[in-house]
Length: 166
Image (cartoon, rainbow, N blue to C red; front, top):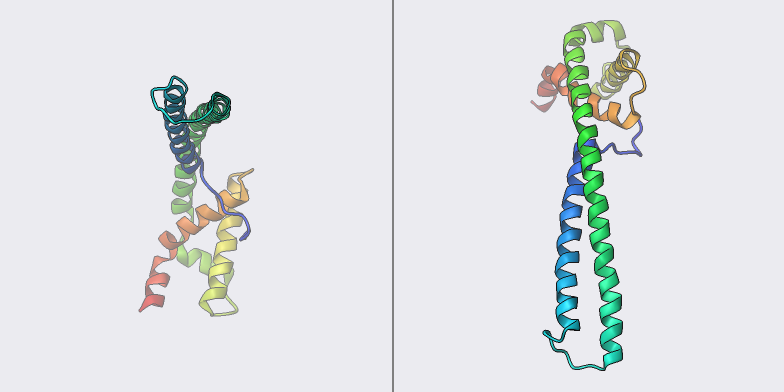
C-alpha cells in the first residue's frame, strides 16, 4: 500500500475548484468595484494623488488576477466534473465486479492463513483483492485502487469487523 499518497477523486477536485472559482470571482469582483469607487472619489480616503494611483493600480491588478484565477478554476471544475463522471462509472463497475467475484470464505480458503492475527489477515486479504482488481482492470492509479479496496473490504468482511468490535 502506498501510505504516502492520498488519492483525491475527481469529484472532490471538481468541488474544490468550484468553490475556489466562486471565491476568487466574488472577491475579485467586489474588490474591483471598491477600487473603482475609491479611484472615482466616492469612497473618500484622504491621501495624495500619487498614493491614490499606486493603491488603485496595485490593488486593481491584484483583483484582476483573482478574477483570472477564478475563471481558470471554473474551467478546471468543468474538466474535473467530466472526469468524475467517467471515474464514477468505473468505480461502480469495479465494485459490481468485486461483489460478484469476492467471497469471504473463498478468499480465506485461497490464502490459507498461517498466522491467525487479524492484522495479518487484513493485509493479506487486502493485497489479494488489490491484485485481483489490478488483473481484471489494468492501468488503475495506485491511490485510486487503495481507496477502492478500503471501501470494498468492509462490505465483504463486515462479519469479521463486527466480531472484532464485540
